Every structure is written in structure tokens, then in C-alpha cells.
Amino acid sequence: MKNLNLFCVALFLLAMAGCNKDKSESKFKALKKDAEKGAAYAQYELGRMYFIGEGVLKDSVKAEEWYRKAADQGNDDAQLNLGRMYAKGEGVPKDSEKAVEWYGKAADQGNAKAQFNLGAMYANGEGVPKDSVKAVEWYRRAAVQGNADAQNNLGRMYANGEGAPKDSVKAVEWYSKAAEQGNPTVQFRLGAMYVRGDGVPKDSVKAAEWYRKAADQGNAVAQSYLGGMYANGEGVPRDSVKAVQWWRKAADQGNADAQYYLGVMDEFTDTVKAAEWYRKAAEQGNPTAQFKLGVMYDIGNGVLKDSVKAVECYYKAAKQGHAEAPYNLGKMYYEAWAAEDLYERI
Image (cartoon, rainbow, N blue to C red; front, side):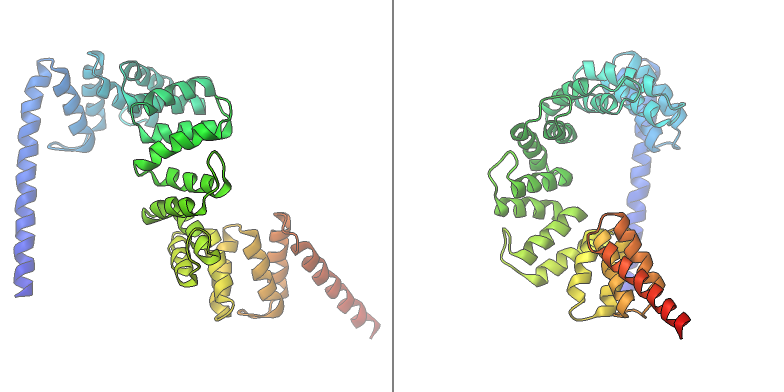
């Protein structure tokens, strides 16, 4: 019976797919007639369908042709997408200056996405001379229309004093607008500002709330920080189990700090696992993990004793400024020299 039900579901999904395909093809044919008559909206839609392969084989060259026809008539969405194609080199040779030109046309008509993209081009100096002030201007135009990415970037510009005087209060204001729209990167940044008391009164409870919002969306850095708050009882009740749960989520995404913290936790119960986590973090350049792994190789804890590997780990940590690594490294060199000198005397 279970297999029969699965078979019926599969048939239903196939039928729906076929039905949707027929609808898309019919829509394409109808739009093409209007597009050939010069209807800008139909030309834009035709370009979009060619670009994503809806109702027709995907063809970025034809997408560009129809976008251009609509863009030449002033369709701001077509101008935006034409700018994107030039920015990425899709269907046309990559050309940042032309991307700026088309973004500018759409932005002047109030297209928030184009305004954000134009701001980014000025911020990065792509297709135009780098100009943080103009970047802020275009980000602001998009941000007041509710564009979350622009709100994020505008907040960051105020936070760093780029293109505008440094202003943590305004940074928090714009970060908050973006965070409330669900942007996980900005939710994490807002949490960090509450931790530091930067632009807002210091508040570890609100910090934990924003970290959680970002962490629930899979932001690995927020997951790692939230784990730390549970470990230290900051803004949330101290809970080592929840700390490990959040660190593991972050570590599984490759977050080096979380991998290091898991190593610290496992060192009390399972030194082999601890060494594995330290190794993962060390390979990503975490200096404290490199030092810890060096110690484990140095004394043979959780791994086979290996002086060469210990020296390698200490050296990598020392190069990154780890305070204790140079001492351990020097100690190993001295012991090796002393042992060699004693052997020669015997």
C-alpha cells in the first residue's frame, strides 16, 4: 500500500510538472506576440523567461536582446537586469562601465535594487572611480525604500565612518531596519553592537536575542557566538549542553572558533575528539587551536607524540602572534639542542 501511494504521488507530481510546462509555454507564446508589437512589459518578461528557461530553452543571449528592447523604452526592471548581465558577463561580455550605465538609468527612476547595486559599484570602484560618499547616497536612496541589503551596507558605512562621519547610533538604526526584515548577517552585527554597547546601551539579553535570530537562519558566526553566551551565562542562563549544540551547528559549517571551543569541551572527556576538533580549527588558521594541537603532539595527548608536528603547530601559532607559542617552540629547540649536546659528550 505504501509503495502504491508513493507511485500515485509521483504520477501526480509528473502531471503537475507537465501542466506547469504547458502553462509556461502558452504564456511565452502570448508574450512574444505582444513583445514583437513593442510592448515593453512583454519584452521584459520575455527576457526574464529566456534568462531562467521558463517556457523556453534557457538562452542568456536572447534574454539580453529582449531586456535591451524593454530597457531602451525605459523599463526600469529591464535596465536593472541588463546592468546585472553586464556586471557578471552573462549573455554579453563583462563590462562594469556598461553595468553602471544601466544601473544608473534604473536607479534614476527609483528602482531600489538598482540604487543598491549602483551604491555597491561606487563602494568597490567597479566601472566608476571609488567614491564612498556617492555609495552612501545611493545606499540611502535604496534604504529608505526598504531595501534590506542597502540598509545593511548603510549601517556598515556609518559604523566604519566610510562616506559619512562615523556614527554608531545611525549604524544601529539602519542595522535594526535590515535585521527586522530577517537579514541574518545584520542580525548578527546588531547583536554584536548590543554586546559592546556600541550605539546602544550594553544589553547581553538583546544581544542573545539577535544572535539567536541569525543562528536560527544558519548563520555560523552567530551560532558560535550564541554558544559562547550559553557557555558563559551571558544574556541567557548558563547551559553547557546548549553551548555545545550551537557550537556543533557552527562547527559543522566549518566555523573555526566553534571547532576550537568543541575541542576545549572534549578535552575533559575525550582527548582524541578534542585533537580532531583542534586540527579542523588549526587547518583554518586558528592560532589558539594550532597552539593547543601543538601541546597535544608535544606530550602525546589524544595523538601519538610527535615533536616535528608539535614544532610545526607552535611555529604556525607563533607567526600569528600567539603569546605562549614562542616559549614552547624555544623550549623544544633548546631541549633538542641539549639532547644532541649530551649525546656528543657521551
